[in-house]
Length: 250
Image 1 (tube, one colour):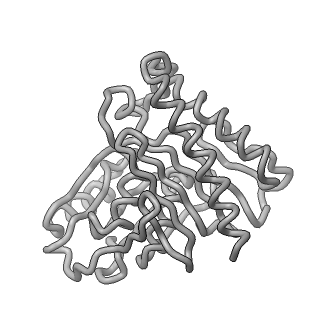
Image 2: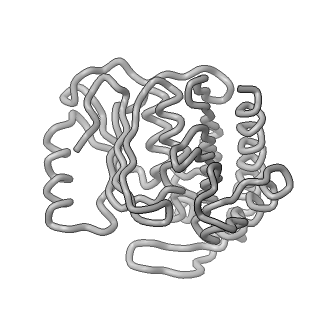
């Protein structure tokens, strides 16, 4: 288990370095590099990614799948351990000085998240966790909530990026089922809030593994559960997570 703590320290150090740079260079790095539909890429994404990839290359032999670079150091895509990196989850939020954005780093074991760091740098909140060991917010233990009914709970979600008539119908059903529904524009932050007991569940269609891996690891490490379904690590996913007291949202 000490090895997992060492790997978490590697991820936390890399996230801290990227977070500090994102804060220090917000003005200079808030330049739009590309737009596709509702998605926006800014200079900060690639600059933060470069820092993280360099840090992981110095300290760990494992392959990486990252939002901007794709697969890195992967001779085969069947490696047991893989880092999943989102250098800046919530790029538009960062661009608009909306505080819900994060650096997200996870370690996958045969595709399943086993540890994660979600550094919400604008709010000075760093969420860390190891599945089977524990989860922490700024070094203090955190747990999922004890709420047992959707009618009393908060669901974190987003408008499906690859919306279909069926996905929008399910989205509408969720709005009617939960006491409150929150869409904060950062999957990593939203999942971290479930882990910290600030919300009861998360559900989204079309997420990528780097968006959700660290947050899902945090949820399970904090006593919750998650489900990730998809054709592969580099393909869109169906993701649900919750406090294990309410069934995972459909």
